[in-house]
Amino acid sequence: MFSTMSDEPVVVLSGVTKAYRLYHSRLAKIVDVIGLPGMGRRRRYDEFEALNGIDLRVHRGERLGIVGRNGAGKTTLLKLVSGVSYPTRGTVEIRGRVQALMSVGLGFHPEFSGLDNIRASLAYNGLEGRALDRATEDVVDFAELGGFLHQPLKTYSLGMQARLMFASATAIQPDTLIVDEVLGAGDAYFAAKCADRMRRLTSSGCTLLLVSHSMQQIIQFCDRVVWLEAGRVVMDGSARGVVGAYEVESARRIHSALPGANGGSGGESQQVEQFGNRPWLASQIDERERTLVQSGVTAFETMLGDGRRVMRWPSTRGVKIDSLRLMRDGVTATAFESGKSLEIEMEIRSEVSGEVTCRYYFSFFSVDGRRAAWVTNSVDRFLAVEGQRRWVRVCLAPLLLGRGNYVLSTSIFDGTDPSEIGRATRYDLLARCLEFTVTDRDARDPAIFHHPAEWEFKTIADPRRDARASTV
Image 1 (spheres, rainbow, N blue to C red):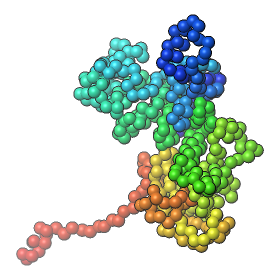
Image 2 (image 1 turned 180 degrees about the horizontal axis):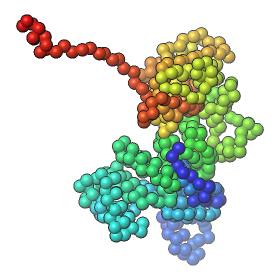
Image 3 (image 1 turned 60 degrees about the horizontal axis):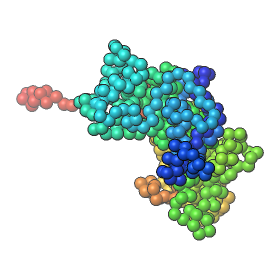
Image 4 (image 1 turned 180 degrees about the vertical axis):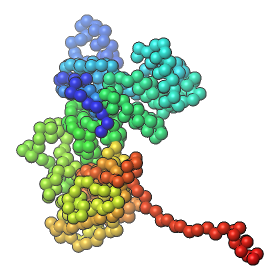
C-alpha cells in the first residue's frame, strides 16, 4: 500500500448511462443528423447502452482498477471521467485536473517532432517560461528517446510513443491520472520506471484510474477494483478479491468454450458447474454478490469444509481441496521468519473411485502479483474411494522467502510431468487463497529469497616460498 487516501471524493458518477446510436446504414445516419423533414418518422437506428446506471465514487488518493472483457464499458467510463464524452443520462462530477492516457498517439501530432509534441502538451496544461523548460527537461530525461526526439512522431514505434505520452502526462502532477492500457506498449525496463513514477504520484495524493487486461498490473498498482460486465458494475471491492473473482469467471468462460465442453451429453460442462462454480442461494450471499448473480455472472466463491471461502477455478472431476492451513511449529499461523520453517497442511476429498495420481502445486506470490516461488511433489499415487479424504503435508525448512507479504495459490493436477503442465488435467485450483507475512532479522532492503549456496575455503600456497624452500 503506497497511497494516501482521503474521504474527499474527486470522481462521482450518479446513475450514469451512456448510449450510442447504431445506424442501419450511412444514409440513415445522414438523415438523422441533418433532420430532413418528413423522413424522421421511422426510427433508423438502434441504441446500444455501453454503460447502464453506473454509480461510482472515487476518493482523493485512491488507486482504482477497472477490469472487464472487451466491450464491457471500461474505456467509455474513462472517457466520461476525462471529459472526452458526456453521459446520455445521469451526472458526472469531477474535481481537480485530470490527465488521461487513453491510447497511444492520442492528442499528439504525427508530423511534429517528439520535442515539439512535448512542449505543446506541457503548454496545453498551463506551463510557460522556466516551468515549461524544467518540465521539458524532465520528460526528455525520463523518456530516454535520444536523437529520435527530433524526428516526426509518425516514425516512432508504439513503445516509443508510449514513453513520450506517459512522460509528458506525468511531468505535471494531476489530481487524477487515467491510464488505459498504455503501459502494455512499453518494454519491461520502461514499465519499471513507470511503476516507480506512479508510486510517487499516488503516494503524494494523486488519484489513479487504471484499465488493464494485465491482472498483475492491476494488483501491483490498485487497492480497489471495479469489475464491469455489459455496462454494469458487477463487483466492487479489494483488488485481490475482485481480481480473483474475475480470473475465475474468465477461466470458466474459456473452459466452457473448449472443444467438447458442451458436446455430447454435456458431462464436462455439468462438472464445471457442479464442482467448479457451485451456484449460491440468495440467502447465502451478500448484497454485492447478489448484484453479480442478478447480472447474469456465475457465482465463483465456494466454501471449504473448514468454513474458509475461496476462489475456486473450474476444473475436472477428480479430487478437491477440502481444508487448507499454514502452520508454524504445529500451530496455525500467518507470520513466519525467514530461515525457520513454514508448514502447509491440506485435506483433499475424492470425487471418484479408482486409482488417482496427483501433483500438488503451491505457488507463492508477492503483493504486486509476481510469482516468488513454487513447490511441487513427486507423483502421489493412491487408490481412491468416492468421498474418501486424504491428508497432505509439506514443510519448507528452511523458509527461503525474504521479508514481505505473500499470497498462496494451491492447485492439484494429475501425474503429468511439471515440464508438460500444459497437457495436464487440473482437478482443483484455489487462487490467492491464503495471505501470510515473512519477517527477517536482516534490516537491509528485503531480498526476494535467500539463495542456498555451497562454500569452499582453502589457503593458496605461496609459489615464491615454495621455490626458496627447494633451494635450501
